[in-house]
Length: 83
Image (cartoon, rainbow, N blue to C red):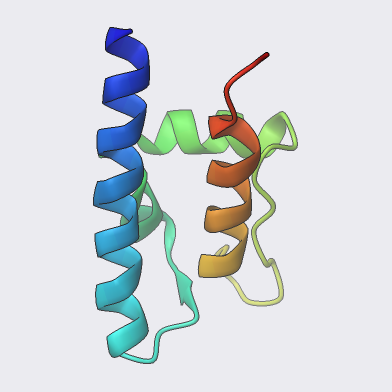
């Protein structure tokens, strides 16, 4: 039960972060901003998510960018409760 409550709190925090970014017309986050949006995870944890194929950054530029839509997709797909 505690894990579900923590997940719901994290989703709320991320939704608020995404709303702030949307108001600034931002389409993607850099690595540091993505870590913060995902509840303050480390850059190593983010790298592991990418390595496992759970998050797909845009690599069109020198540094990876994480589209907001990709972060939302990741959260939707990994937050579903097993039946």
